[in-house]
Amino acid sequence: MVVTNEKTVSEAINYRRSVRVYKTEPIDDNKVKECIHLATLAATSSNMQLWEFYHVVSPEILKKLTEASFGQSAAKTAQQMVVIVARKDLWRKRAQSNIDFLKSQYGDKPASEYSKREKFAMNYYKKIVPSIYSEFLGILGIIKYIAFQIIGLFRPIYREARQSDMRVVAHKSAGLAAQNFMISMAAINYDTCPMEGFDSVMVKKALKLPSSAEINMIIACGIREEKGVFTERFRVPFEEVYFKI
Image (cartoon, rainbow, N blue to C red):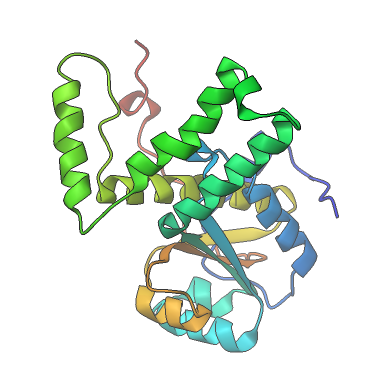
């Protein structure tokens, strides 16, 4: 199924607001699913796609997520919810998926016949990605951090290689996907509200997620009530955040 956008990208961005109160009018599961599919086309660090999307339509689970979200109005009135989950712990599986894809693109030939570019891409996922994501009780991260800082004295080097840094990387990619989803929803006149106020342990329990999964955000979905947007949009002056160099 392909969603036909009713708004341009600019119109969808301007239309999107964090809606706190939704109508009781149901929304189409398949349209929301297609917007989630568009979310998966977001930019992602090293194409690792360390994310998962939980499309919640069950009244029972919606109730549990509302409780976990402290009963805020966006959660209470949402017709559906989408939970964006960062999965840094799946880096080995995702790296292997990239390797398998590259092999399918290179054709049926031995590795010795790969071009220089093909070898670099393959080695990126076989060697560089493991060197960045591998961890052992935080010790490897500290060693890598010190080593990279020393190397950085002599040449440019990727410095953010600790376990905490890679968590940030996974969440940044998940956030990009979340924005894709919300803009896609706005394009078809559906509304959303990204929520960061929740008990992550309760959310994981409700969705039966492993402890290694991390909740990026919960997105309430529905059609806005007239009172669902509390105020006019406020942004600090553009001149305070724009710097042309």
